[in-house]
Length: 295
Picture 1: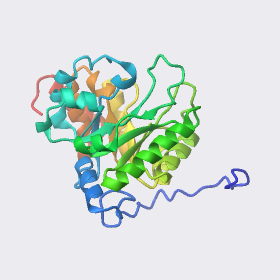
Picture 2 (picture 1 turned 135 degrees about the horizontal axis):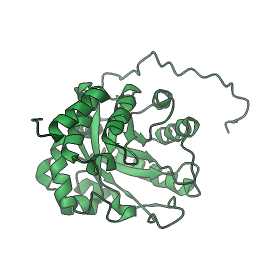
Picture 3 (picture 1 turned 90 degrees about the horizontal axis):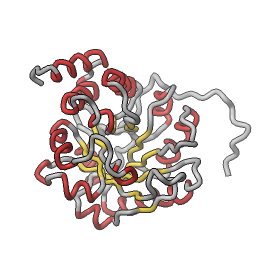
Picture 4 (picture 1 turned 90 degrees about the vertical axis):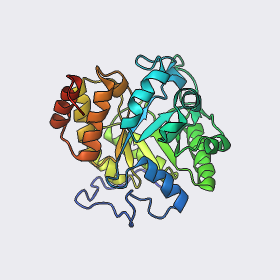
């Protein structure tokens, strides 16, 4: 067993050296088979290597969330501007027309509501057969590193990875941060690396100090979670910093659907992620559309 004590403190993340992509546009995934790469290429644009994901899976633990009271109205307004729709099978089947032809990150973990003090004891709530029926591009599993339910959530992750590998469906490992869990660089360095080493093909995590080191130390692409609602300009700054830090994209929920103008906001986010806009340029673009300008 590895000994956590006795390691030297100085670490070299080689931040000046890009990851070797092995002829594929996504870090660390060049050796996957054709079907897996095809699904990933639906999620991450081959021309940019990046993705804009719309998260509307909040209802599986929070119920009706502000801004998502009517998924059947909100999601169709935003779908054309994102690359991936991230939701539960119930929400997707009932509220997302299959004619949209968008990549789907299917929420496959299930657990307690926000009323529970410890939400870390989740289960796998979607069978691999149903993920195949839904033509999922990825299966999303929440992983609680350092929480009471850590062992069971790791088991959920590993079983989903194994099932997905049999059928060519990638797994998105979501680093969960509960109320009592720290949000430090040290924690995210550990959690993202663990999730990747268990075999997750994509890791979703929060932005933190030294985010570029977290990205560099993770052998697969990292997608930044949008987190709590921020003013639009601050959310675009967060997006810009994440992309500059090496993130392969963002998975935003509240910072899009709770914005004053959700369609304008998601387009501004896409400008940063795919077109290299700065946060200032993106906010000006947001204001332009919000004030009636053409997109």
